[in-house]
Length: 178
Image (tube, rainbow, N blue to C red):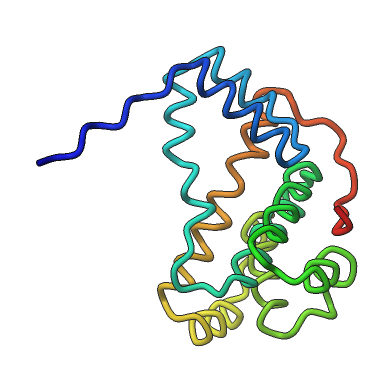
């Protein structure tokens, strides 16, 4: 016996899902609603890319979330950074680690400083420190480094989409005290 195919959500169901997500995380997802209204097929293509930034099998939880938040810092997207801090807390990342990441990144341990600096360099299209890449590969393995690349690439989709739609407002500072 085979499983029945999962029905494709309607645009109305997707819109309600976006609104519920926005309410749950105090996040303005209206730019995604705009994409959905303008191009349901385009929204579905965007949806297909969403797992990139969330994929994690080898990379430790803290390293994954440091990369996500640092990517949003590089993109200067306070709303997306705040969303990722909320999600990191929900995932079990220590509040003090996040506080250090946001307010005193030099206080991070060497491993997480490397993750942060690598994510920032990649997201800002700066030269990549190959010695740092080798330290990351040695620490997390080839699969962990690959996941780090996926995190940075996948997380950049959101602020890029916002900017491309003309919806990038001035970003507020990120707070860990949410």
